[in-house]
Length: 299
Length: 237
Ligand SMILES: Nc1ncnc2c1ncn2[C@@H]1O[C@H](COP(=O)(O)OP(=O)(O)O)[C@@H](O)[C@H]1O
Ligand SMILES: [Mg+2]
Image 1 (cartoon, rainbow over the protein chains, first blue to last red):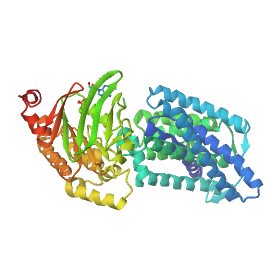
Image 2 (cartoon, rainbow over the protein chains, first blue to last red):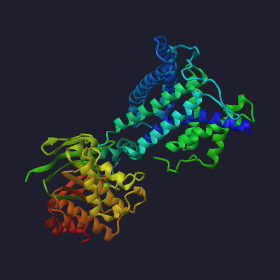
Image 3 (cartoon, rainbow over the protein chains, first blue to last red):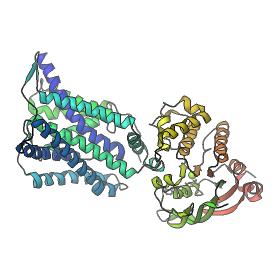
Image 4 (tube, protein in one colour):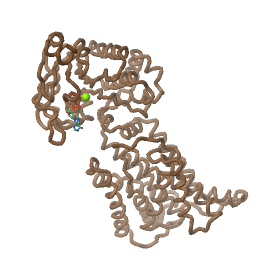
């Protein structure tokens, strides 16, 4: 029982990070029906940027909380720029191309960004400084850390903020309108390219925050970290129903829970396999995902 | 009367096949002009070119004295051109209210926008009753009303309607045309596309007949209604 409770707490922390990354996949898919495979690498860039900038800030004598805040903001800015550039340079020219073309391009962008990651940061594992305490806190039989609590709380706040933005602002309505019908949205005066760029920017900035969280949670970052994380988050998005914001959140949290609770029953090395088995099972019974609605395949 | 919209030798092609073969027509300020024609004549293609949805391959479009040929649709809204597209095109997953707000997307005068939405609700009480409902759950007629209301929220000088009567029951068609006439009476210039020639010519000031991408007849709407060629081809003898 105590083990279960502990694994639930661990699962929620990891799951909230999956959810943040999954939102990036699902937002882009919702608006372009494109799986942006490079998103995991955007997260990696966010994490590595924060490693270097926060270390530099600490060396300059800045306090750890301020360093974390500024490093995260800088990562968000860098990732938003990278995301917008990927869309502008790689995906936009292919907007009317057969669907296979942008898909292959997305895979190419993922590999390209990994290589850029190596060139800019190097191949090493870089330690992420302990900016928020990781001293264990024990509540009853469950142990967590201030860092983990921070990750979970910030994730939940960000998800709430995104839902609010999408459902209660003019820009959010425009995003939903473009997702539903680009041409008609254009007739309303919506600059479609601008809305798509904003979508990439928001998704990538959320990815940057997720990258900082992962780096701080595991205390390290390196150029290949985006691959498995991206794959898991994509799995979460599909499991929840890709294109659906709630789906990404539910899928992310659920995947984190399933993985960690599963650890009670299977050995740690099987953790990743377990996640994908769950995906397959979900898709067999609900092909549209847990929250997703059944939509006709677009022509 | 000055021409609000002047179309000269407009050509639209899809993959090398010309759907519109160099048509010219004009719409004067305050008029209701209709473009009638059979299915596939090129009516929607004409409107698509006028609203920036397709790039014409030839000809010019002058609006309010300015050349607007090939201007993208989001930029035309600000100039005062609104299209109520074929098949209504409401955002099914947005609420009725959000759909109306999208119509006013290019505007910034929030308070005035809300007043105008209330006016539309006054004019079309069915929409008011369904303000929070997703537009996809409305009936066809209600969706058409919503699409027209949404287009009006852009405060267009020129409202273009693509077959507003399509697929609607006669009673609903009547209601829709009441709304269109009210809009025209209040001073909005209307370019109406219809397959229902009788209905269109009864309501419009002038008309053009489009056949396989070319204008074959034009003139006063009443005269066209009485024209034996129009009668034979479009009014069932
Ligand atoms: N997107 C398209 N691609 C190819 N051909 C099209 C397209 N849209 C319309 N057409 C063709 O152009 C012609 C005119 O169509 P359209 O403008 O829709 O006619 P209408 O609105 O009068 O029924 C038709 O022959 C139609 O098949
Ligand atoms: Mg048509």
